[in-house]
Structures are given as structure tokens and as C-alpha cells.
Image 1 (cartoon, rainbow, N blue to C red):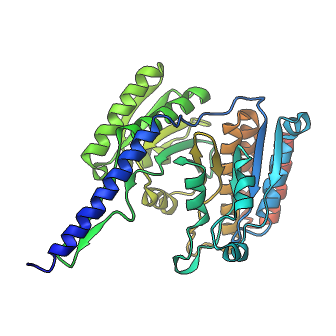
Image 2: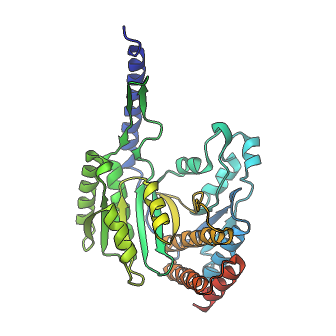
Length: 373
């Protein structure tokens, strides 16, 4: 009997477990609902969850900006900022888990969370904080806001957090064969499509682009095409357009209209797409991970290569501020979100004109502009 026969049997058993697990997950999706913009006036609890590798002083800036923009709501009692401290590397090592139970309970008491950046565990001793937040809060989609630094034009990219290429789902048989799997379910595609169309309707956006990518796989494209067409019928008045990823990137670069929002649906996480845009264009990005009951806002670990330290800090700060603008939009504080976006854009333009890379001057100018708007 060939030596690989036992490996084939073992992989078939693994594949059966994978199939059953994903089928059960797909069956659960229908009863979980979708994330929607929260109605203005509802009581909102915003958790501030600093990381252990954040830019020094970043969460002090987050606190000041949110208290300034939500001052009326905080005074009325319809918004509350909750500081959640203690989630640092040493506490995780002591607890032997990514998020100690008492901190996880505090997190779940909030509607939305602003997160920091955490040091990854060494030798895979426990899962990353982001992975645990995704699982515990049932976060299913990633929302990325992209802006060119010299304009207020915003592009919003929605991606599935769960489906797509399975990082641990590949299989190898000695040096003879390697197989990777791309996961796609009609239920997952329908959930993301409904989320995108619901957001577009709430924000008055009339067009959604579906990013066609030949590398996504035929079944993935078919699932999302069917889901988008079904959602388009339910949300009348929103146009659905197909466009390849390269055309989306070039269109974003050429676009000059102010506040011309655009929504793009990407079938699943495509990190290289955003890294390429960061390299080719001067952009800053805000990020969120969303679920039916919770949403988490903040940055992944930034990668700015050889950028100057001051400019890197400004880029990180601008990205976090853009994430806060997403948060404000998602809790119905649209005017506050617009004020913040305009202030960030003006501050970046002023920095370019004066060639100043000083973070303190940037923040002082930003807060002054917020007050003036």
C-alpha cells in the first residue's frame, strides 16, 4: 500500500468535519439577523478598549473627540463612554486567555467598542484579541472606509469576515499535492448583501458596486451575484453595478467630487487590495468589524514601511479618527461624523501645505476645527 494512503484517510476525516461544521454554521446564519445603523435617540454605550501597542496618547485623543462631538447626547444621557482598562499583555498571560472573563463581560455591555492594537501572543499560546472579539461578538463583516488625503470623497468597502479562503483549511499530501479551500455559502452572501443595501438606504447612497474578481471562484461569484440581485429587488431605488477591482482602484484615484460616497462589496477579505492602494495612493482608512448585536471600530496593526515617525503617527491617528467617523455614522450621529471627516480633511490639507509633520500641532488644529464646524 502506498505510503500516502493513511494520509488520504486522515484528510478525508478532516474534510468531513470541515463540511459538517460549515453546514451547521450556514444553517444558523438565517436566524442571526443583520447589522443596521442604530436609530438616533437610542441609548448607546460606547466602550473604549485600549491596546498594549497603541500610539501613546491615542485613546486620550479618542476620548476628547467623542466627548466633544457627542456632548449633547452625553448630557441628555443617550450616549455613554465606558473606559475598559486592563487588557494588556501581562494580564492576558496571567489569565492564560486572550480576554479575561470579567473584561469580556464589560465589553458585551456596550453596543459599540473602539479597540486598540494588541501584541500578538508568542508561539500561539492563545488566540489574538481580535480573533476572540470576532467569535464572542459574532462579528461577520468588515467595513473599511477609504479616503484620499486631499479630499472628502469616501469609499466604503464591505467584506465577509468569515467566508473566503480558509487559513487553516488547506490540505497537503507529502510533497505530491496541496489543496486550499475557498468557503462560500448562499446564506452568508445573502446576509452581507442585505447588510450593504441596508446601509446604503440608511445613508441615502444610490449605487453599490460589486467587485468582480476572477480569483474569487465561480461558486463564490454566483452566490454573491444571486444575493445582490435579490437584495436589489428588496431595496428599490439602489442601483447595482459590476466592476473589476482594478477599475475600482483607478476610479477612486480619479474621483474629484466632494462627499461623493461610494459603497463596494468585496466577496471576502482581500488584504492585498488595500495594501496596494496604500502603496499607490495617499489614503487613510477607518475600519470596523460588525455583527448583528455589536460593532467594533479601530485599526489593525499598521504597516507604513520606511515612513517618517511623525508622519506615521499622523497616519495612524487619522485612521483612528476615520474609524470614529464610521462609529458616529453607525449610531445615527451623521452630522457629528461629517464634522469629524471635514476637520480631518482640512487638517491633512493644512499639514501638506505647511509641510508640518508634528502630531501635537495636527491634533490641536483638528480639535479647533471640530469646534468651529
